[in-house]
Amino acid sequence: MRLTIASDMSFWTFLALSFSTLAAAAGTWTFENGKASVSAKGSPSTESMSFSATKPLTSPLTLSARETLRLTFTLKDDAKTARPHQAFLLVSDDTGLETFFPLSVKGESGKAKVELSHKDLPAHLLSADKLSLSIALGSFGSTPGSIVKIGTVQPALDAAAKVLLEQQKVKDLGEGAIVYKAKTYIQHTFREDPTSPPVAITLVFTAAVLTSLLGLFIAWFGILGANLNHLPKALGSAPISHPLFFGSLVALEGIFFMYYTQWNLFQTLGAMGVVGPISLFSGSRALREVRARRERGER
Image (cartoon, rainbow, N blue to C red):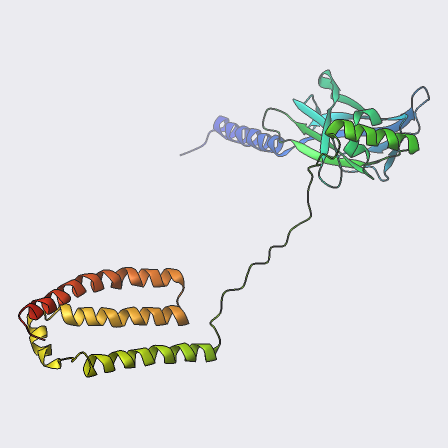
């Protein structure tokens, strides 16, 4: 298929538009021309300090009880000035407690400002050694929002301000109230897997079990009068039930041994779930055959 000049131009136009759309979507909400100044009420502002989204304030700001921190900057949607749907100044301490102050934005020029003083800060933030200042911007559309740290501020409290601060804490939370904040990291130490008992104890109980089995066989043959002559007749009447029942009993003992040496509880229960029903059904039929011989007077 041959491309004409018009179709060729349409292709490159479409490619340019696609690239510009992707480039616009790659930007974020940001700001520029930031100025920070601290001044007391009724007195001229001190020398302002500059900052931007890529260059935060180089030194902490000190804010006393009678001073006001004033921040001004220009908001931008990628490369052009604009007014976002949400624009806040985030103030937080080292423990994670934070509060926010909405920015005052003038129209679509993006000119924004915010003022901060001691009376605006909650008592528990005001008592911190230093506070982190961040600008949070976001709006509708494809441009992603951003949270950019611009610097730190240190509240300066004199003796009278500290007394008023403690009174405000009691008023806000009540006497003896609990302050919920981030706790120190807890390192969980899990208990080690249980181990087998000492070999000496194992041998003692093994000997006790073997002695009990030996006594059982002695009583069976010497006192109760066990009769192995009926074994062919029993196997002839129930050729499957008797061997299966005996084999299941041996298997159960083997399961207990494996649980003691290697298996965990879930493996043991799974094996018991298979061998248990076999032992139940084969044992009921084997004992039914024994009962039939007993009723005929064969012992």
